[in-house]
Image (cartoon, rainbow, N blue to C red):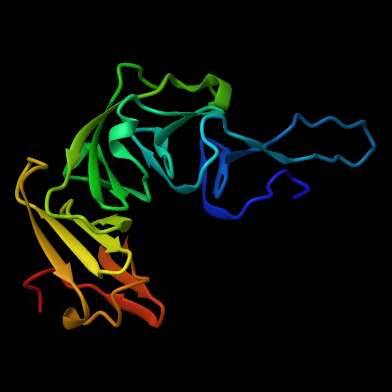
Length: 238
């Protein structure tokens, strides 16, 4: 509380030398004041968190994508530009964003987990990141303008609450649902609209269908549950 952070923290990320924290009442950045001290005296710094303007609701997750920082929040998808959370024009079509993910198969798309399904957003920008001066990092007041975010629709056939999105080596997506196990979204080619859906529950070895979280690590997909870790096998793998 003494540092200006009074809410429960749900997500945290360090990006371009800055620490951002997602809370139940918005997004904060850790502010580093310029140091000032007299010779011979001990140096003190008073660090504090400042609110990122643009949203005051729950921030569930951050993700770095295309050299930019995005946040999934109760009031939609935002791009963090300096100390401002920028809302795209299509945000009303996306709705609440609980999770974010990317696919190596579709480098121009960002996938957003929703209370009822998963949305596909195309990210593009005519404003390229400029290299910072030698020996310096980009500070929040020197970030490029916001990206162009276009809502491209939802993945048909998926209506579950999506809490986590993980990508495997082939660019396919594994989705953690709220209470309905794990969903495997296997793309058929280079068209994001062509895919197959596989669902995994207790009949596939899951200890329970709720409170599961998938993660991709060292070439392997793992599932964390309330009773331990599990290794996930691709469909057809034995």
